[in-house]
Image (cartoon, rainbow, N blue to C red; front, side, top):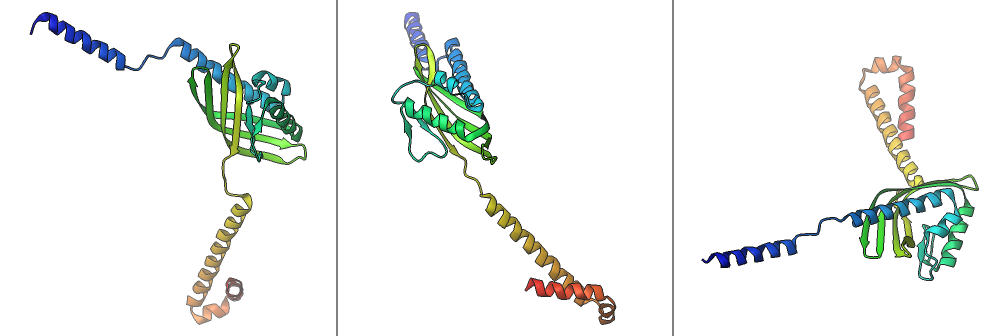
Amino acid sequence: MPNKLIRMIAATLSFITLALSPPAPSAAAGTESAAITSANHAFDEALSARDIAAMDMIWAHEPHVVAVHPASKTPIIGWAAVRQSWEATFDRFAEISVSMQDPQIRINENVAWVVGLEEIRGKLKTGEAATFMALTTNIFEMSGGRWLMVLHTTSRVPHRPMQAQVQLQGAEQSESEVGWRLSLVRSCLARPFNDRLLSGGERIRAVKSLRFSM
């Protein structure tokens, strides 16, 4: 095979390899990811501080922005309505702390979204404590050289109600007590008759156990 043809084939293969190789992460991509991380953290800080002025700086003041809170029945659409929803939230809480664990960030041109698990701890003005985990999605759009929030949705992670936990624990405890009583009765009845007569205390406990376990 002529050397010229070999060189052409080699050059073609090199071009194909370069075309199919994934692009190396650029410094710009890393910078934008850091900017999204910062914007997302600023949102958590504003929420934790119950700072509506900070929210004004974080959100895009557009009619298409959306918020869905854990107690929302329908999506809240438009900046005016979203802002009012935050004012209502801040008014209900005496204190609140929000932090996102392991946020997952994706950027596509002028849109970025963050998904993660949030831990929410707070105290209502009634004195009632509020602690739960929530699945959260935040979406940002690049506008005027800044990443501004355009969507925030959060929903509680399902968990077993406390009442059900108490009932389950009570059932487990009752089952354990019944087993202990039956063991006591069997042990007492298995002993010689004279020993059973001499052990009045055990006899009383056995009778009570039989009565309560029925």
